[in-house]
Length: 326
Image (cartoon, rainbow, N blue to C red; front, side, top):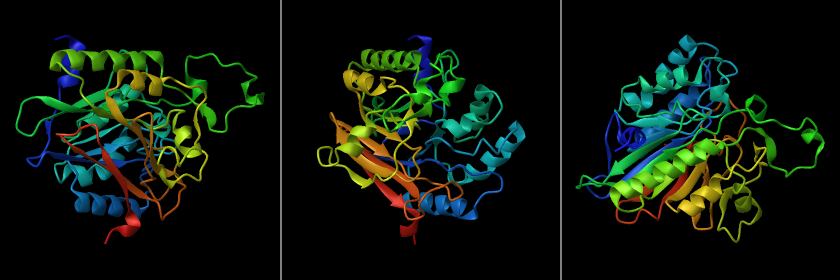
């Protein structure tokens, strides 16, 4: 077993399907608060977790507002607050970075290591490829010591202008797709890491392991859901034009060819909240979980994913909006 596979197998707290064969994930995206946070956000997250009792919580990026939080000390104080709903219930949780997490002006590796210090945070990261919050979290069968499902995370990075990709200075004058924006893309070495890690799992387990991919900024192909709602069986809110990467990174094509990730879940567009199916892959956009950032109060909440160990290709997902919590 090579070092990459060893790291991919390693978990601070083992994840396992429950005795009934089910596993529930709660995704919270765009909390995007500061130390001067809206009290409704923390209260609502706490109520949501108490009501849903997830087996795993995924923070889907823009977990804080890094344009306001500036120091290591401030990030620690912030996480002490917003990790509490999971930590006091002893619920494993993990995170991917969004653009506003990268905005904090401290080293990204240090940043994610601060998260990983928390007892029930099971996040992992890479240090030898572009991006930071690239990881896989395997989930074992309820009564067998074998992996049956994988939770993938990939860092969608920050601004294209801060990347090591040279951009034609005249590109802003060009007519581009409506959703094309200034954000960075997944770099090829990140795609290689996912591809190679997936193959290593397949060889070790003697079969492909189905999974979900969590990332913050959606790939281009999410636009197929928005523009073809009837064909893709889309439902939910799709009013905001998604502002995604300047170029197509190729992550969807890579996932489609590898054929193990059955669902891609993202955040980033606060006023959008939908799910649909394209080329056999479920594609979901989470709503905004925080009250301080822009958004529609009626949509704020978190997205649930339900997986059964006997049918890991069929992932059930739906939104829980704070307004519906009692």
